[in-house]
Length: 274
Image (cartoon, rainbow, N blue to C red; front, side, top):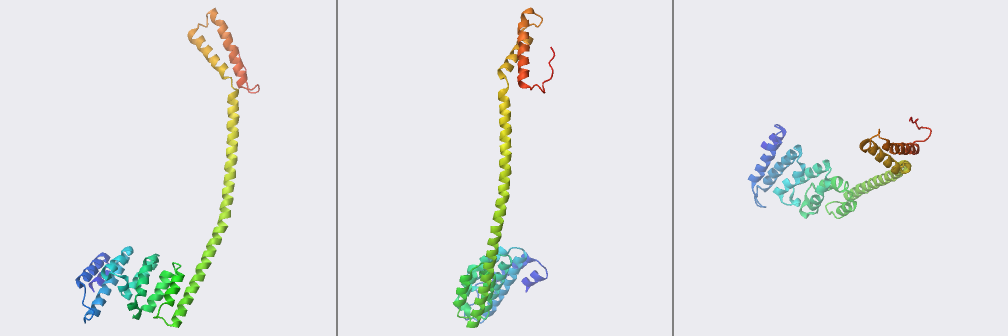
């Protein structure tokens, strides 16, 4: 009662979990199988675990639920029906039904559990929230056909449910495959257009580079270097006013005219004044 008040009235989920743990620990191993308090002991322990599961789920600690419960029951087949039901619903809601795959199978295959009145509803819950969402149709049919606790009508009803779920699963797979097939040609078309544009751009770039390289090859590098060297001699080493430097200046002017004519075309060539 104290743990339930912390959960519902005070909304103190951490304190509720702590109270449930303290209560389960205080119960100890419990009375023996033939003890008159055995039923009451199991009921109190189950109630504490139910409150603990709800408190952990409220704190978004649903990943800890199964391990937290099994520390008090030690084996999946020993779980009370109410605890197993909450675990199946919880992990189905968070879209992690595979967590309960082995746990539910172990509980349903346990011979002692088949005599419980909740067995049929738990089997149907396990099929609808674990096996069928995971596409385990063969395992579901095997489980239903091998269950002695179900009569023929119940087995036929569950097998019909499995068949309907298999048909819906197949239709979804076919639609998904058809959508992928339609998407692939469109993707290939877009990629092909992009590849063609990229190839055209690379071709134009290659032609531009080739034209620039050809233009650079036509430049008279040797004459330009010679003109620069003569200019250096005239300005730095020679005296322009000296008569001995006149032949060098005349040669420099001739080389400059030839280089100017080679670099620029006659249309765009500016006039040269002496």
